[in-house]
Image 1 (cartoon, rainbow, N blue to C red):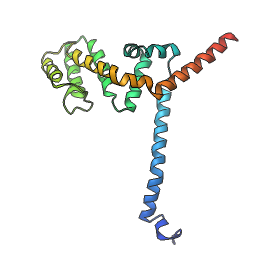
Image 2: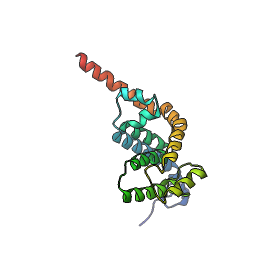
Image 3: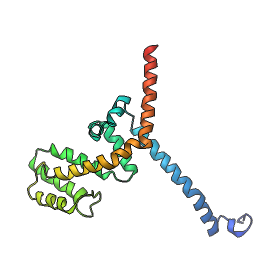
Image 4: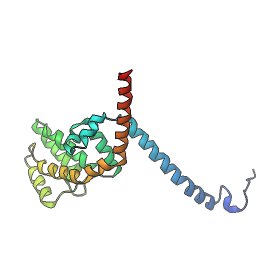
Length: 192
């Protein structure tokens, strides 16, 4: 079997140079494609809130986190900034506060500690040494309040840093535009 060479040896499909050229041209295209696929998946998963909900979200982080769609939108935004561990920790603490079983309380406290608090944990949150030590001590006899101080610090961190960026983000503005478009469409239906 004869192989056809195109021009010089550097353009042959078996040439290392050909592989480099293809890698350079296709790598950015694949990256863009994967990003757009991820965006489409996020948009399918995230149905979009009503315009009134979006207005409430701009009032405070508390309003945003009290709404299921708000939590999802904020988590999506934080994920795009590679800091979703903050909201994941906050939500884990909210769920932890509702734990009633003593055995479940202990196991969940250890899970939260291992996942978010321990130094070099997979989703380590930004806490000072003193707060970490207080949590470590409280794990000897965990109560529903052993993460309250850390949760409050993470809430303030999100409120003063990530939340304002979220409100100014293109993602939020796109949600506002989509909600406004749906509201206008629904308003027209009512008038007809």
